[in-house]
Image (tube, rainbow, N blue to C red; front, side):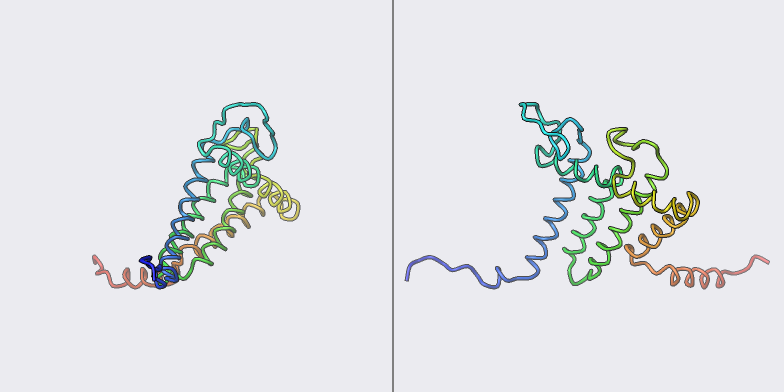
Length: 196
C-alpha cells in the first residue's frame, strides 16, 4: 500500500463542520451583497443595461456585484438593504445549529419583513430615498403590493396593515414572547414598595 493517507471520514461527514461552512458562506454572501448595494451604479452592466464597451465597473463587487445589486435594487428598492440583514441572521442561526433551531422561522418572517418594508417605502416616498429616480420606490415588490393594498384598503388602511405585519414579523424573528415579558414586568412593578 502506498504512503498516502486517506481522509478522515469523520471530518468529511461532520454535520457541525458542514453547518459552520454553510453559515459562514451565508454570512459572507450577506456582506458581499451589502457592499455591492452600497456601491450600486445604474451605469454598470446589469439586467437592464448591457455594456459591451470597456467601461470601468464602479461596483465594489465587480461584474457579479453589479448584477446582484441591480437585481436586489430593482426587486426591493431601498428595502433591499434588509436582505443582507436577514441573510446574516440566517447565517448566524445556521452556525449556532442545535442551539438555534429557529432559522427557518427567521428566514420566513425575515422575508415577510422585507416585503412589508418595501411596501411601506413605496407608500411613503415618491422617489427612492437612497437610489433616487433610477429605481422605483420599494422596488417592484413594494410598488405592486402597496398599489393593491391602497386599492382595497385606502392609504390609511394599507399603512395600518403593513405596520401590523411588520411588527408581527419582528416579534417572530426575535423569538421573544412579549406576553411573558409584560407579565414579568407587571409582577416586578407590583412587588415595588409604595412610597406612601
